[in-house]
Length: 155
Image (cartoon, rainbow, N blue to C red; front, top):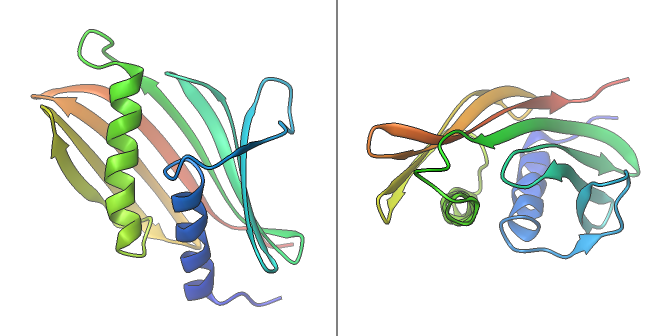
């Protein structure tokens, strides 16, 4: 099966914008203790499943015609809870990623500042294979970070 990379990228952006960033509806957890979000459009489906809150780990999977074709793993944590709260981190992530998704992308990096915090995302690669890091600073101090990686899945 050959998947159009531009179509895959566009679906991932729509799915991400409609779930965590868009406060999408949670679905029945697929694993004990997980938080799960799902988005579907025609033959495309996206499932994000994560554990935790202020420190968390998760995986996103994209399916086409019910076959997994792409995935991303991530781990995020608050490094300095004296500088930032989980609520502030969540707000900064959503505000920053919403700006990136409006540009029809989820890779390539972005920098956004608000209320004394600066969000930075740095990534390398393309939708078929990538890795990156996002972090939030207060002044020069990094208060939160997330590491991610992923790409295409083939049999």
